[in-house]
Image (cartoon, rainbow, N blue to C red; front, side):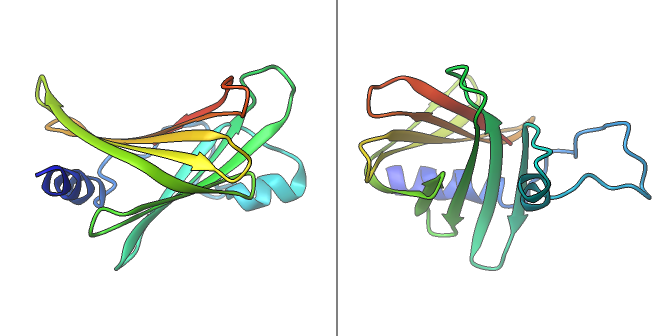
Length: 151
């Protein structure tokens, strides 16, 4: 049953139906990609998701919540059959648990991960009549949250 709910959450998210964020950038001067921001040293908090035929690929760039001034780069891949893969700052994560629930009209799937450097991460997929979201929270080995991002 959990697998079914997670797949439903993924199906709702694959459309990336959230409207793009409005900003003051003109159509002739599009916002640079995350890789361009990193290469140019012009980081700002942002997220981008691309729907493929096999998976939804999301990239997140977020400032450090611990006040170090560092920027964190994360990739989340979500397959059509409900599998999730996470990499944060080139640290690979492996799945340690999944959960799903339905509350007040929102279908939520939660995926918990442990990193090879003992970091922890959680990816939440939320799907409702008003839209879909993907959120990522990451904690270091000392269990201090250092990254929070969403799309």
